[in-house]
Image (cartoon, rainbow over all chains, first blue to last red; front, side, top):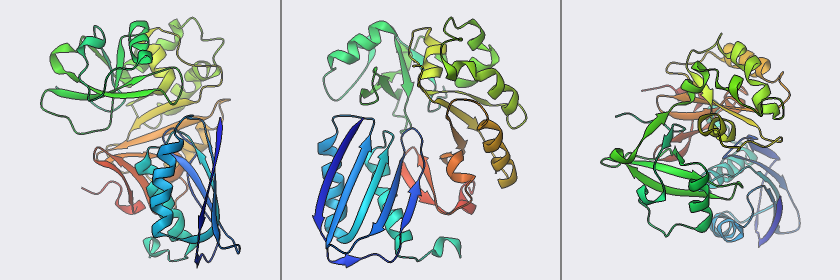
Length: 103
Length: 209
């Protein structure tokens, strides 16, 4: 088990806490919580060790485009970068409270 | 020839794999221990099947291709159930994930005829090489060619949660695979794993053609 942390400057806020994803092979859980310190602070717990660079690449890109002030907690179960990116986007959408998928 | 993600293919050895990057040492060791590869969820290339090599740890996964004519044997997750292969496994009493299979089998037979173990347990049952760990989850694939009604999904999740290991069920739909845990939650969207990568789909559109 490895814990990774990343930080990005942020200007935008999110409206509410969100929790998406599942505990299961090749997937991950993402918890987004609003934060007021002008940063995105990401903590990742993963069972797949040695992928720090891959995480950095996915997160750099995501938080450059989405500069949200939030505490982000990720429990990873060996998700691919594609799955990570989708789950982050999903968590962001839920946190902005536009559940149009359910309309 | 037809291949599905999670099928296990037996090969002669590392020399039969086609890959973009050089084989790492662990890949060679792994194949000499158990000459089996797992079919990956990726488009079939002409006469080449996308496969993955498993290593001992979760971070050891290697993507490659195998030509049709180098495949010695195909073992599907369903075949492991037909043979009730866990009954012959010598580690049945040491590995909870193996031990839970009789119960899981009884439960699942009410929901689908086509299911089977994947992951480390499936690999061990197919190869007879120690792969599962005492802490291993039980990964299963359940074929759901048509819509699985939500009440059934919730019932299945409840029943399957009664065993003492964590059971991770992937529902294999004609469009790709979804996690039972996520589907039975009832929330939209859900993550669908397709051969062209993962995507989020509306829950009511999972089985749409």
